[in-house]
Image (cartoon, rainbow, N blue to C red; front, side, top):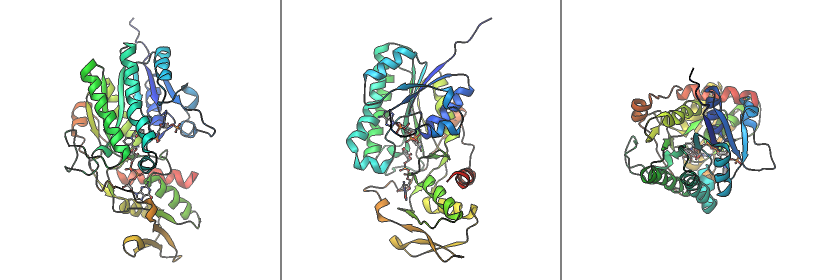
Length: 341
Ligand code: NDP
Ligand code: GDR
């Protein structure tokens, strides 16, 4: 009887939102999963613990800023697939620490690709690219062929890693794919991102907290999907005969304001919007209190106003489609936050 060799995945950024869901998926598919981890003084495994998979993963001491540990890790664990999810992923921070962001987000991918090339091993590579590369969009909706126009050091850095992935594929025949993923959220989303900030704060307000949800540009529009659906697209890309680039999105767009509306409605808070511009706010009709207000400090030096992706290529080639609608996503996040926030 033929026995299939167990696949080995190396996930960089396993402590992040996508790392946790991808590890869960690959464990279900009987992969041996290694996750990279930077030393830290605080607890990092909350998401992996939440999914009850923290003990099923082997961890490697690893920083994308260091080349030797990447080479050594590849040499030691012999991965069949590497998913490069690690990044400085918060757009506003990229304006404050642009050089470090670029080192991690651009050169980090290059370091892995160089290590794969030098190792001469047959390793498939996934690069976590982003709709932020479209930035000030030149086409609606955005596809794999839409020209890029990034609007932050984060977006510019990710554009480099996108192109270097393509370049290593074309130059050295490496099975390297780039997933251009639009925003995807979940209960495991970092608290600084707008969806999680909205759901966690409004859940606490619903439970009696006196705080006010302070946000920035509520007119910005995003194509929001569920992270659990999106990691499946990453996996599918690496199972293809040929590597390629794919837009992963829902094909629908909503403003931050609409996301707040959906959350308030799910929480059954009676509310009204009042004021204009920086004075825009949400008032709780029963308590007469302001529960949402605008804070200028959350605006960005350059904004991405509108994103909406066309995932047809992924649908056709990967047989992938998004399963979770925004209303359902809001419910999943709020149910979680009502319990844990
Ligand atoms: P998170 O911010 O939740 O996770 C980022 C991960 O990267 C963390 O595990 C972090 O580790 C790790 N990391 C950061 N810097 C380094 C470094 N120098 N060396 C090694 N590891 C590092 O991101 P998401 O899970 O949301 O996103 C995953 C990837 O997908 C990112 O590359 C992101 O840019 C990209 N992306 C995300 C989208 C989204 O909507 N979520 C959309 C499109 C792309 P630590 O715990 O040590 O900080
Ligand atoms: P984004 O996500 O920048 O799209 O990057 P984020 O949730 O931070 O912002 C989305 C939009 O909401 C507006 N906004 C606010 N954003 C935050 N964080 N906090 C606020 O208070 C607030 N108020 C309004 C923003 O201006 C923006 O327009 C995410 C990250 O996961 C990236 O790593 C990833 O590449 C992209 O999604 C696709």
